[in-house]
Image (cartoon, rainbow, N blue to C red; front, side):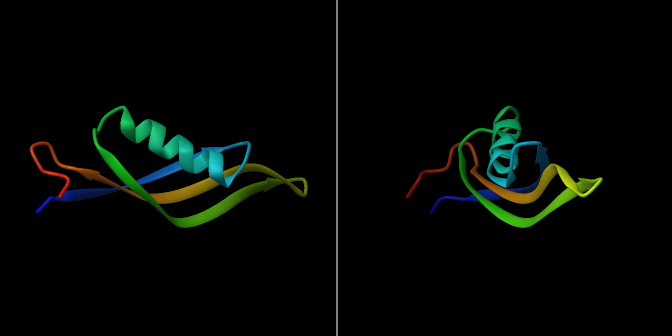
Length: 71
């Protein structure tokens, strides 16, 4: 039985929600190994003068703990 851990990460992008989610995974991957999935929990955007200026996501990232089998 494998064991996963879940962390919650906030990230943003000026390109879009998909890019913000990728930024979250990229940043998390710098400090944890074996990332297995990302769940987008919440999305929102900052607006200035009637225009979206940044896209923000709150995601849950799961990763396999060291020494655990993938089974």
